[in-house]
Image (tube, rainbow, N blue to C red; front, top):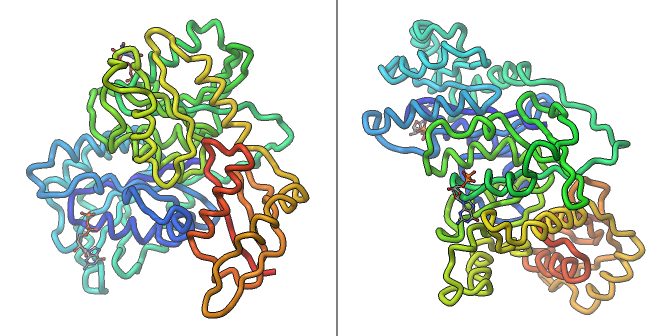
Length: 436
Ligand code: GDP
Ligand code: GDP
């Protein structure tokens, strides 16, 4: 299920305050593993049983109204393209500004659901001040105070009502791998896809995707059957070719969420940059498998840069999740494209593998006995048993007497041992310690 909710509005109305409130609870869980938050503008949330991704479009720009007016306009247009629901935030303290009117004008033209949130309604007095926002011509509004959370419940109820019921997954169908080819503009994504699948004659079927806009197309190449995730956003191609982080990240969100494996293309002549990292992080956060393709390798002078040096540099950027296949390819000369596909299929297999409980315990218990978690306050942690959970992505639970005493470094140690003994290359793993 990938519903995308975009928060739009001019600077300082309180978008990020509201955004942080929305993702708070989830964030704590998701980020306990990696310990880092790389991107403050994207998060997952859930209300009344409906899950959704939230994008704070304003998080990408900060500053005064006049400088960024064009920027905000483009962001609203992109939100209109990519999101399922748009939350338009305005500020009761300031009242309607010319820029609010500009945004409203764009939003009035579209049919996508819009929720107007009048923020900073901290007290009953301000409820009355909110009336003026009827003049935006967007109908009903919700009065909220992002800071205290007051009024946000009603807004979220309305949001949840707009989102479709979660789908029942049909577990009986042997699912094909779903690949999303992602990366910043000009990395060579279309060239790669064209080189890989050539003409349309390789298309087996067209399946309407589970979301309204995402389409899976099934291909059969080199003996591998797989789905390529295409989204309306990608198909439409950027109207404007802009090399801004915001655009490529936002355009990738739906494709990434809808896929099992992300094929992240980077441009060898540019290296692994902030945008690549954001997209990588998005994939990892969604627990997707990842393969990194360093494309345009034909353009790199091999005596100035070896694959080994290049690979090392990328892995430094991927910290702490470095166990990712990195391949050097050329969509132009078709170098190593088969290998790229093979690797993506392998990562898909890695991601869905299930390790038998007996095998896991046989291997891990002696390792743990040899190097148990360090004692804390004179207390010893005893791990008695472990198992892999029946989840779509690899998750392991270790049962012990004092789970709260097991710290991050030991978790890492366990993860490394799992990776040494089983092939989880390209796949994020979750490890939990629980009381038994
Ligand atoms: P953004 O630029 O739209 O993301 O706005 P921020 O979330 O950074 O908020 C801008 C300012 O408004 C900050 O100083 C916030 O503390 C303040 N603010 C946000 N929500 C509220 C609210 O509900 N009430 C009041 N009084 N101030 C708020
Ligand atoms: P996209 O925006 O990620 O889909 O990138 P495109 O596939 O449109 O490629 C951008 C540009 O890079 C085009 O001019 C391609 O011809 C070029 N390009 C793509 N792959 C390669 C490659 O492997 N080697 C070289 N030399 N050029 C490439």
